[in-house]
Length: 196
Image 1: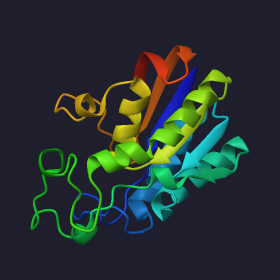
Image 2: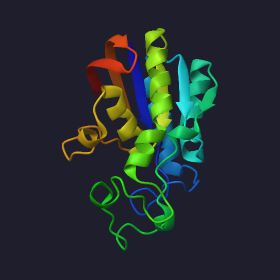
Image 3: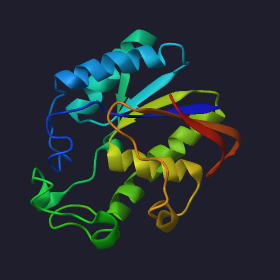
């Protein structure tokens, strides 16, 4: 039983701004990354593909879905964290310590990391059901939504997921395959994970 987590390809805002919910398209590098990702994923079985409603995730998911003969299933739960008043701010000008300052306390007019964790609960349960039913899903999301979803699927508690020792830190257009065995409702047993 396998699931593939994919972070959207690059946009002009990545690495420079808190992009969050800003609906920006892929840039030329991102489109090239998507083509490479398509090649990487071509030998892998994907039965269903979910994506965040943001354009950069859909643009990343659409070619993969097309190559596999699938439709992209848009899921609002997969949207990136809402940076609130920090949305679009230059990272160098507005330092942000999410795990320190906004673990439970929302950013002004935005979300906390725990808010994202809670909203991912429904889709995490659905993905576990997919795996139980022999469906191999791929999920195209964002940095924080994917990190928190990966931790939920590993079955770790929120506070444990937010330690500095977390190993899943997705880069643009990265694909991460999680292998499970003996799936039980709300208690997946991860037996391995690898970058594709």
